[in-house]
Image (cartoon, rainbow, N blue to C red):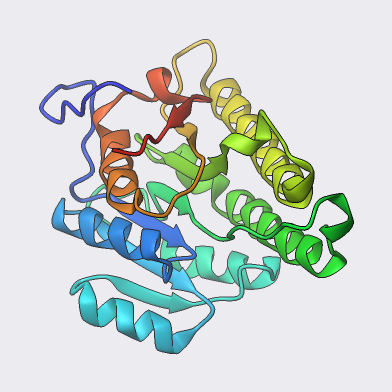
Length: 237
């Protein structure tokens, strides 16, 4: 991925942008919220647990928190409408970025260990990606620098029996995000896209939260045409 070049006219920069973090109370959510706020972005941290959101707000001054059931499309749509009604630096209303961090590893026990409970939880996490991207798609297209990012897994390319549920759910999220990227490109064709959807790929996100946060900021230091539909590996030090 190119180094951020925020001074370039073609690289819009994240300062003043409104960025929504879905699943913000995770370790990676905290890291992204802190880094984006420090970079001058307006961060809206969304989760389902009010107590954990309050902890995030205390540790990241300036972050706006919202409790929302991201599995409920009507609730997500209502949140999108609320945000659109608020004035922003860039004037279009809505958000300039959606960082989707809902979900986590579930698996083990070989193919026989791929439980219905695990699959339902993973499927529900995928549902939050569908809901948020549909509810905020127009906002990302209206921005002159819309960005969507998810975190996927290296297991999509090399699935194992003990993680079959997890790899299948991540493959679905990967395909959905690439479809969003195609929609972004189609919306402005034949001109280059102004919005980009990217997929960060990890073996395990543990220990890479700060690297993820830095790469998220870098999404606004690179043009949408360079980013749209790209897989970006995160590497352990």
